[in-house]
Length: 306
Image (cartoon, rainbow, N blue to C red; front, side, top):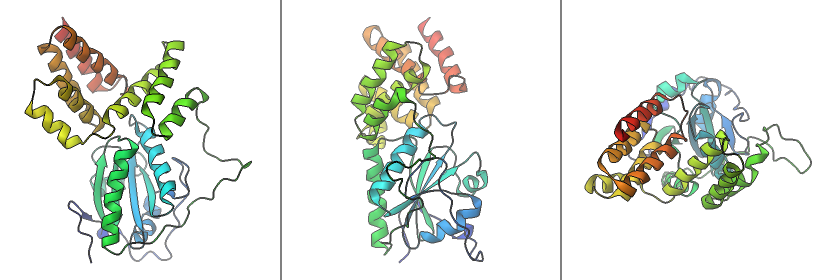
């Protein structure tokens, strides 16, 4: 029975059936995990053929994408929890542009599922673990319906106690915050970042991390489509407008998010205006400060205020 999830795109034309034996998929460089591989042109065929036996989840990422590392860590953790029910294949679009172009990736991070050689888009942008689980659960149900119930073989051995792992160590400053994020406790992670910022108000990394965690916490359990629809239905609802801006930013549409908030600064007054201004400044911290969208929005904000 063919995989027929809405929005599926057939990848069979990208799989070169003549490649035998298939080249091995390498151990991930972008993140440790027993069921994680780096997907390249050389390993593409082998990994895609595995999708006839078990689910493959492809993460398109770039080191330049804000928030991508947090998403990668969440996906690696979820892949380990799944114990081979699906394989995480990571594509660095900076190095593997041809794969991204062939699949039509327009923005990263982006996550898609593959079942029986067919691709189904899951989500784009950075989402909290609970929302990611929802998309993966839906994908797994579709896979079972289509008879794909196998498990992936571990791509990397488990590191035994006392052994060294080649994964770079996390910055010890963020150990407590990272542990809270891994546990899905965004409120605690925010508190830990607050402590770092209070100790050093010029710590740009801590400020950026606090802003990113705040964004994830606000989006935890939020349905993006419903949030955008609510904002469109009631332009006067400030809470709905702020949440819609969060959704737009997480969906990699920072220009729309910033324009929405700048518009609110122009039309609101008093405490409401200040609330919007502070939220906009916080969202700026989640993006590279030389991003053209940030630079334009800062100019627009100054014009709106003065």
